[in-house]
Amino acid sequence: MTSRNAVLAALLLTSIVLLSAQTARKPPAPTENIGAMIGKLEDEMRLAILKGNAGWWVENLDDGFTDTDFQGKVRNKSETVELQRSNALIYDTMNLSERTLHVFNNDTAIVTGKITTEWTYRGQNLSGEFQVTRVWVKRGLVWQLAAQHTTRIAP
Image 1 (cartoon, rainbow, N blue to C red):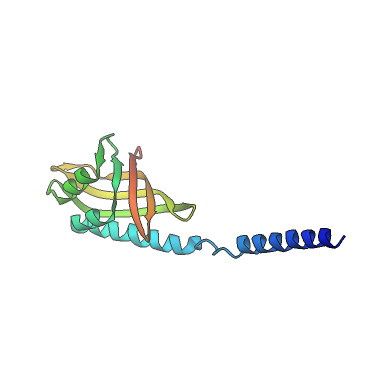
Image 2: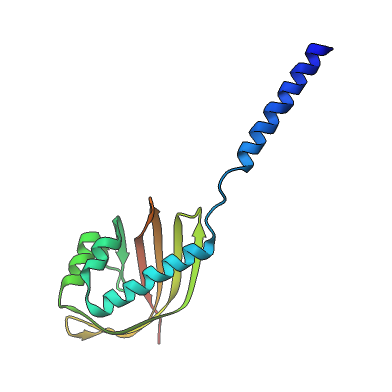
């Protein structure tokens, strides 16, 4: 009986150690902190658009970035940076409203919202309201924009 009790005690001790190791893991980052970070990046992007700061796009787009604009044109990172550097794109106003944030596994965030904007592309007025969906991914300690899709809202 003594050896049987010793085996049971060893199994019990091992179970306790394994269970405590699992519960001692660091809790995930609060969604509020991620929301503040993504909100800050969204605000910085808005200012970069209005000021024509192409450098923001170089720094904050994921290498695999894909943008699908409201006309169905798909652009990668280099094409998007080039567009932001060009004089063809001029924004007078841009406001994001009805913004919602969904966070997955603390390393992926999806932002949806409505953009009201006044802008021209190659002299053509394209102002209006648009629905936007953006996917942010965390690479190490840095959040980057991985994808964006925009749809014009019918007047």
